[in-house]
Image 1 (cartoon, helix red, strand yellow):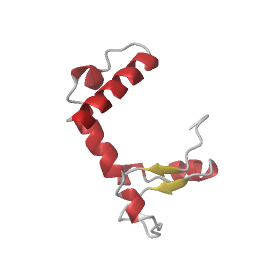
Image 2 (cartoon, one colour):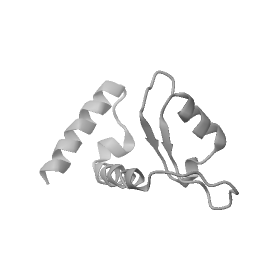
Image 3 (cartoon, rainbow, N blue to C red):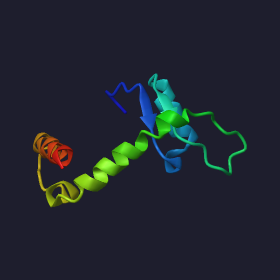
Image 4 (cartoon, rainbow, N blue to C red):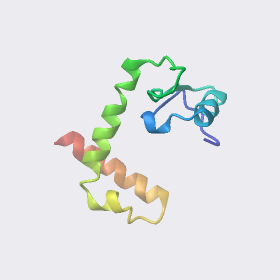
Length: 94
């Protein structure tokens, strides 16, 4: 998270670790990560905000239908991001 200043970090239960949550909160962001069910202390999270995670998951599921995105053929991050923008436009036009 070096150099990033997010306001909110949304993740699923797999990212629920005390270390990660403390790093997120140290950056000044809100950790919207549900606590695993076996923990004795359950964190309170904003479930309405957590539902937004579904939008990102569905977008990447559609974007991975384009082989160039799924296999990351581009060598530079700039070219990869440009193709992700193109794929996003194509998805919106469908």
